[in-house]
Image (cartoon, rainbow, N blue to C red; front, side, top):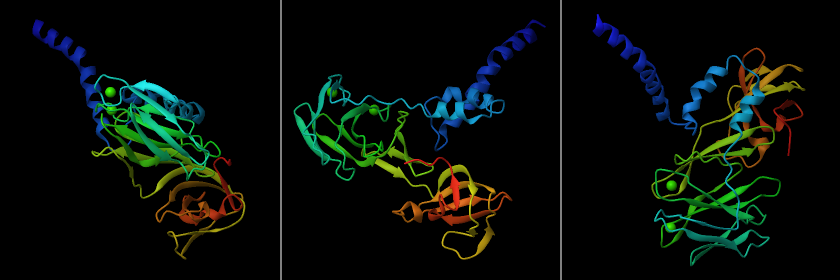
Length: 286
Ligand SMILES: [Ca+2]
Ligand SMILES: [Ca+2]
């Protein structure tokens, strides 16, 4: 009798812990390794009862933005001795000189065409002993760019990636980078490689998820560059821009292929030049 009472108590005490540890396995999934792993269940709980998008998007749009500085002391190589880091010779063309202790490296952000305004120190992977330095430029119209470096104690190395707007550093070796695409926001993922470069993880498609409206009837095609018509969009009907196909690295926004969902739940492709005259979607800015 006593024993069964005891096992009931033990069950009540340990069952919640067991359930929680079972949920944690989610962490191993490939993508969405957000830093707030423990808050995901509560966020999911509130979602069905509060479907309004503003609080949700506000929550995800608060990245811990590192401070942009021109000189700072920070331990970059994990030997407990802080390095003196500074930036000088900032030219309008985009050239700059980065100093780490007695070492210097010349860098350039020429392709951006706007001078650097400082750098950030971030810890891309909290499980290794290094911190990284990202030289920052605000870009011509708030389209930031970062050029990343790391220091091994005797040399400065450029990490082979130029990251775009609003990078997020969850600290697990992944960097999420967004860019504005005219009416939607593209998200790319970079991973820190064993050689300490930042490698872009290719995605076959990019998620768009913007709703819109048809202004002129245009055809949707079976696949990109196909001539088989799936549907002709009805004027004043609502659509959803589901995803974008950037394979082939289109240089112009009008050359991007988009997958559109019609109001009758058909899916077909159209090219970027239809925006915004034939279809308007998302938020128009820039
Ligand atoms: Ca150090
Ligand atoms: Ca680190």
